[in-house]
Length: 93
Image (cartoon, rainbow, N blue to C red):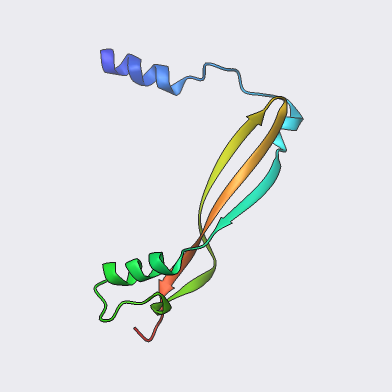
């Protein structure tokens, strides 16, 4: 019974949902991240390839690992979109 109460408390919002149009249409800023050569080489190593190198991976255009962050600065609302470029092993490997 006690665990049900804890789950219920986490499911309810302590702050009412904003109805302000300004908060629904936040200014967006996209921040893109790309893997370093070291990270790409580590990816090849993790796959157990012979002679791992950063050149064994290629960008997957249009594919990202993405998360969103809402930041409140005084009374300014902005939505930050974090996008990390996705990579795949080249077909020749």
